[in-house]
Length: 438
Image (tube, rainbow, N blue to C red; front, side):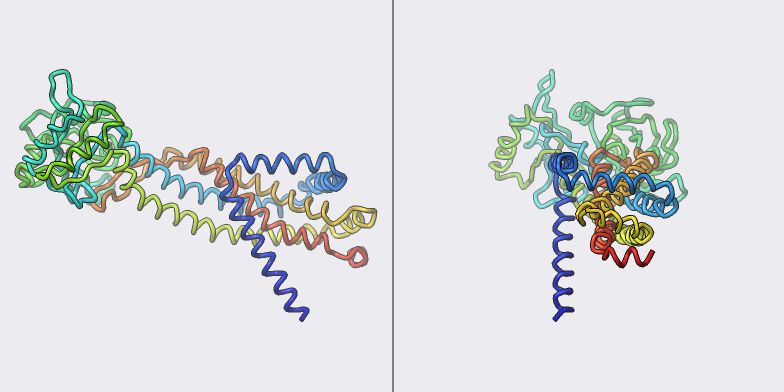
């Protein structure tokens, strides 16, 4: 019966601990700040809290004498936080790069049932009909700000010598008007009717032979790189050329994959979508580019986050055991001190709080160290991945303040778990046994 009670008590403790950790990870920083303030007030204005502060100060003052054991906790947690933040920064950078390609006042139109541009084929008649929609903005000459575009995958050698795949986008002059944020940083635009390329800065970093003046072979034809552009989004991983020449080289006829359209305003999208849906000649789907690129980034972003959390969780388990060993050893070495404090009137709660705070202080140091290392090493680090299942997308890791805060919460959670059981051990250790053992 006694064993069953202990088992049930242990299961209850694990359940409460799991609920606490889930709430800790999910709570916003404002709620956690409020908890910290309330805890500080408790330590400052209650007898038990002041006792806890006194015991904590004694433990912190002796950390230098236990530098080797304490560094195990700090370094272990720093490793967890560094790896976790780095992996999440990969997901954050990928998502930010793809999502920044869109806006609420620009629409993309694809063939009905197509989830991406590479799967879409639209006829010239459908494109002409779309361009006549009244919700599309016009330039100074009254032309619709709509850009029919063709997307193909081209093989280009990477800088590491391996074969790679890059998106070749066939566009016209209106493509630059629809995307005013795109700027040439070297060379010039391609000329209509010529096999000339302008390449994004991301593609230039990842692939060989894409400097202005270089020649590259695409579709059994020789093309000349004449310019480099920067867009700050996923388009920077592409190469652009005249749509008619791309269609002729890859035998796509007069068809196009998509139409990018600048709308008269963000509030015009619903009317634009209704206009297209009301025309029986069209079998197309429209979306804002912001929503479209968000959908494109969502699957891989989720996978990267899951990988980061799984890897971080596995490493966190090891860090918890390291903290447990260290703090159990600390409690054992301070058994007489703790017993003396309890003998002169200190309750068990101050002892629990003191051991917990000491562990969480070490965890805080580890979290700050791990976050700093992740920011120094990985923030702005350039990587590439497969976008749309075919072409390479270049992006930068983004170590944001939100990720650093998330890593810090993980560190404190590890410290909480690692210090809880040694703290309970210290508080329940019989005074006579502790004094006799020493």
